[in-house]
Length: 258
Ligand SMILES: Nc1ncnc2c1ncn2[C@@H]1O[C@H](COP(=O)(O)OP(=O)(O)OP(=O)(O)O)[C@@H](O)[C@H]1O
Image (cartoon, rainbow, N blue to C red; front, side, top):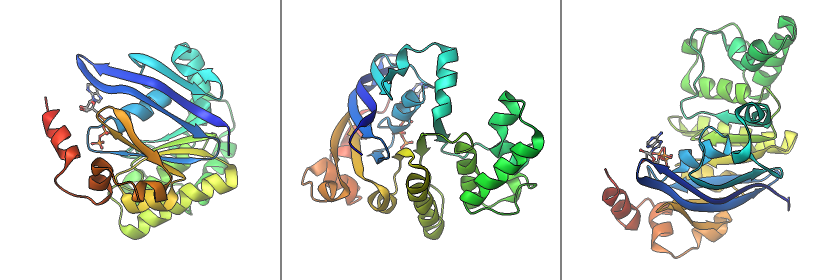
């Protein structure tokens, strides 16, 4: 697990004249579970949207498996994105499609694979995330935790080498959160997936991360193993991991309100 597989170099992003990312740099090794934390609005989702190529940086580079994806054309990017699965914050399943159609969506839309094969593939991915017998149901018929797992099945449908998770345990009870954490670990163990996880869930972060990075004031403020982060004496890090309502993070958030 030594090779840098994803390299984010000096990533700067402005929305209008608000500079949200001010030179974010980090790298993720192949097979690593890298957790990105930070206060509300600190730019975590914005960072991972750059990694999947949904946003173009104001400046900086995103190098994945040796390729700077910020330089790819739209078509090249679509092709490249097959390597990546993205678990959206709200799951983002299509309400009007059955669960198996949601999971097999990529193949239904972009390939001529026979329906029977797509159904079988969807069934296998659903089983991998612990869902059985839900193929014919609609998203509204599942619980929140089941929907998250179905979204995860969709994210892994194309056998991605990288999965980006945006708050995978938000809104879930502690048991379901632990199930999702186990799935993230299982996908790494069984298919060697490289993972970047954005989360506010400290328990989850400390149980799954190889390394944790904290974004603050538009930069990577601290980075290290869970143990290194826990023992970091810096006031920003301490406020974060001890969930203190007052401290430098809160001050920064309020001073950044438009
Ligand atoms: N498309 C956009 N246009 C303008 N501003 C945006 C856009 N996307 C994000 N922002 C702003 O960028 C900042 C960072 O947003 P982002 O969603 O990345 O934060 P986050 O760290 O993921 O927050 P949270 O933990 O609350 O989800 C916010 O102030 C947000 O309003």
